[in-house]
Length: 338
Ligand code: NAI
Image 1 (cartoon, rainbow, N blue to C red):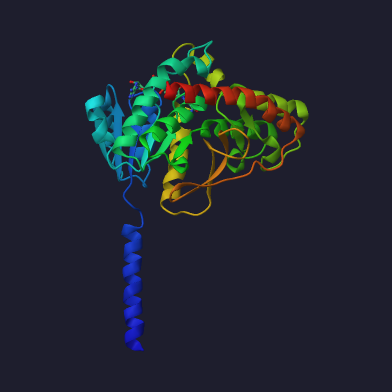
Image 2 (spheres, rainbow, N blue to C red):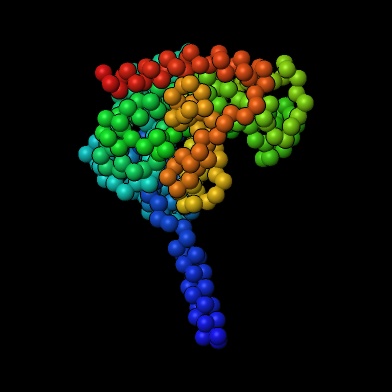
């Protein structure tokens, strides 16, 4: 029995050793559009993430500089910059997670849909490359209009025969980040404790924060809730106007993108109960894509959660957002198939 015990304890210490070194798997993360306003701070934040072992920074220009700069930070990941179409394959090969903030941002007076003509083509090309070079990677779509670029990606992946709806995510985390910040301000509760689900899509009225489900609870009046909803929906425009022609949210978006990517990596690594809102293929409403709470796991989406109880105001908002979201989805599908 001594022998058994000592061999068991040897096995345990081996397991423990495995745990301390091998428990954080190798993960390659690729950022497409890595030299942009979002891409650069997102590259910085992903370089700080200990779950990343390889950080691949791709853009059509300026990635050698960004990679050299970020690469000097003394954290786990190896950083490589890739520039131009000829290097896209290498940027993607072996990636576990691809984050896409490539494309043009809004200027004052523009809607996200005004970006469609330029960004749809960029997303189409990048997704064709993903289908070829890293078909099993999770994809985090940041490029706007997200309501359409996610359906475009899905169609491109279907054509390539590798579409897995569990692996495609529209990043709506910034809407959640904003809803939390604005709610905490009005509810007078510590912002770090706040949770607010945000459902629907990622543009104007399609963004629907569910303040009735916010925690910690606060007794906010209907007028305040209406104003909070509107401010969350117009949060992006608030930044676009404040930047006065110099682009849209980049720093808060990089934070939100890094948060969502971290959740995806945790899910891949088997961490239980990782739940974030995201715009995914969905059956929670009659629309084929919809943002809601999603449980993340080893294969991406583990479960799309129900919307839960909505207030009358939120029920109205839900019905009101459906026509716009539906037409943005159809526009994306049509573009990808033309
Ligand atoms: P930016 O113009 O500063 O950067 C975009 C980068 O994409 C540039 O470095 C550009 O060279 C690169 N790029 C262009 N074509 C490319 C291609 N074919 N392959 C790889 N890279 C390419 O723009 P910013 O501010 O970083 O915004 C990027 C996108 O993110 C925009 O579409 C914007 O609307 C969107 N966005 C999304 C948010 C969200 O919540 N999902 C929030 C804020 C912005």
